[in-house]
Amino acid sequence: MKISLKSSFNLNETDLETESATLGALLDELSKNHKLTQIEFFDTENWEVYPDCEVLVNGRSYQVLADGLDAKLKDDDKVEITLFTLAGG
Amino acid sequence: MIDRYSRQTIFPGIGKEGQRRLANGCVVIIGCGALGTIIATSLVRAGVGKVKIIDRDFIEYHNLHRQVLFDEDDVRNGLPKAIAAEQHLKKVNSSVEIEGIVADVNYTNIERFVGDADIILDGLDNLETRFLINDVSLKHKIPWVYGGAIASSGMTMSIIPGDTPCFRCISASPPNRGMTLTCDTAGVISPAPFIIGSLQSAEAMKILVGAKEINRDLIIIDVWKGSFYRLKISPRQDCPACLGKYEFLEGEFGVRTTSLCGQNAVQVLNPKAKHLSLEELAARLKPVAQVSYNEFMLRFTVDNHEMVVFPDGRAILRNTTDESLARGLYAKYVGA
Image (cartoon, rainbow over all chains, first blue to last red; front, side, top):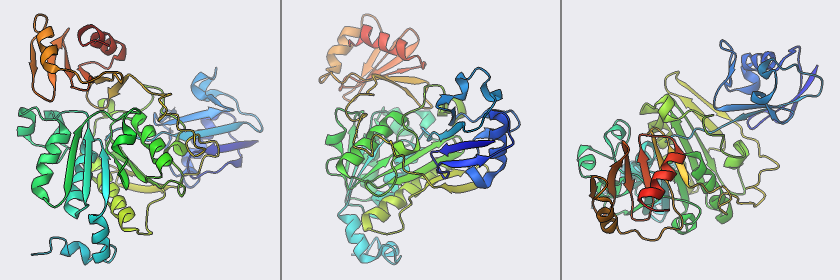
């Protein structure tokens, strides 16, 4: 399956061949491939997106998808990972 | 006269010419908490010609573990951070023009505050005002240096208008409330802001002396894990600020209330307020609350919440993060 991947950092828009069938599995795969994303945005033990990141699938937050991280992916889905900056100081 | 900067000018990156440029420079530091006190200390000691420090808040005991310019006397004297910083730093380097300004920086006043700045340094505790700085920076082509720290983590990046990606290229707008970590939920340990503030100071020095080695990446550190890495930020093709739409500066996202990071408090901003007589307000509130005030602020307690009111009409309500409650109590006791 081919997924279009985009982020506000390092990754310019990239097409990624993946075997991951769900969003959570894709994030797990990306998170473990640190060379690709270079940041930790997904807690692979607790299966959670870190609070300083947002993940959109075809423009919609994973939080509003009916199946959340279990949402099935299909060819040409667009997954966007946005890193939020730290607010404290 | 002994050259106080001799150890700095020996460093080739500065040199005598660099020192002259520092002395001719003007920096504006917005926010004087952990980051701001580090930045201000460093740049005043380095001999930057003019240092303007703007902060809306006053000093409390829970600031002292990380805000290096302040001490227990400042807390006892009820000093605003900007005033205490100015007083302390004038003793450090009397050749620097230091101006402490007690104010909330918002879209109605930021252009006035940064008009003479060569660089804007970020010492803030909220994201909304950083988006505002980003707008004013791009509009007036003033470089700024972002810095943020929470828990054991920190981030920093230099934004050079027309050259680097901007702050809105990283994320288009502040996240929804409750989505991000705050000092309230995650705490903060001093080494994180110390390192980030120091990196911001170094960036300011490099920009002022015209060095080429400016940081164009988002640097992310974690002092607990011992990690330090860089992310290349891509320019966002649809970034409104890069396209000349300064939505935060135009007040489209102006907020009347802001939850203050790490303080369990809400700030109420009344942009329409004129100068407020604290003496008159104290007289009005005395029948209903125990009130104390000085020329800088007025304090009173209502419904188990302490409210601090400033002469510019701004107020901080303690012991809550409920912005609606803050707006309500402000309207009731101070007047909207």
